[in-house]
Amino acid sequence: MASEYHRGEMDISEQVATFSLFNGMTKWGSLAIAALLAMLVLWFCTPAGFLAGFITAAVMVVIGVVALREKPEAAH
Image: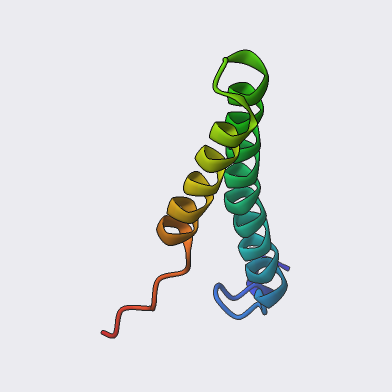
């Protein structure tokens, strides 16, 4: 029975797709939560108000999208 297993011959496309989806949801979800939290804290917990909170969240989202987007694969 152990001799029937051959390392590296199993189709792992589903695992790769699930791993990529989980990483993407974690990455973009974290950015959304961080931006929302910053906006709400500035809006309700400081005298800065809604506009300062919204601008801060928008800047965070723009910087986050630039930093977190998929990079092109390096050609080897």
